[in-house]
Image (cartoon, rainbow, N blue to C red; front, top):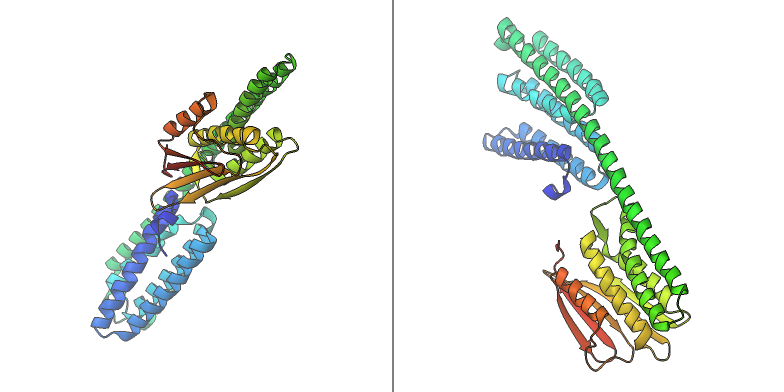
Length: 374
């Protein structure tokens, strides 16, 4: 509960501060009242703290920002109004009443006016009750004090209203600018994806111009490489997160595409087990290149009887991740050199990762990397 990482936006950071002050204030007040043996006040503080705890838990679960602010606003207001009457309109309690009023700037404009007006009405009723029943208390008979306090009260109210409006205006401007940027970024990813697919289609047409099988092979390999990069932009275009890509979503989609494209009617199956991980577009492109090279090699050379299993697993260890690629094919006695292998090594280097290859009972690649790679 009350983990700062759960409060990301500016308004949520402000709410986090309000919650922290509320909790620390209630705990400190309860301890102090226990020491002075004021058990009724301690009980009120304990009840308020308990209700506040459930309000916070509900927010972190449901993320109802405005409802949470309204609940905390009225919880603190009612507790303070209770204390005002109990302590016979003591000055220090009256000044604390300005705290929930200031905190109400987190509310939307309509909610602020509605609840602010209700708060103001309740405040006048409490003050009227004090003036009638507690007239012997000198603060309520001091005109200068009453004028000064009401001026301060309305100043805070007006300041909160102006601040609320300025926040709302700034928020709407930022929201509009952000929506425009998101639209433009999505459009860029969409166009890059389309352009890469056009290049892949041109390569496909070029293949028809030649009967040479080696040329067909080279064209198919490069076509798949381009499609693997285009797939990254396609996922970003369809995603709400324009910075990071889900590792499992991308690898699963890419591996299935390669399997359909390359295996024809072969009985090759996929075994994918990937933990949750989000990576940048640059990192995912490198992993896409690696998986593309490994899978095309396995499908073409690892299964003489056209039957086998390709496994792609991503494991999380304490400080790092490990991508394990393996097939149960014929295997190799030693590393083969070639453009594909060099491409894999270059991608591993770009990822600042470590590569380990095991040549037994098929082929096994282990790539160890940190989850926060750039």
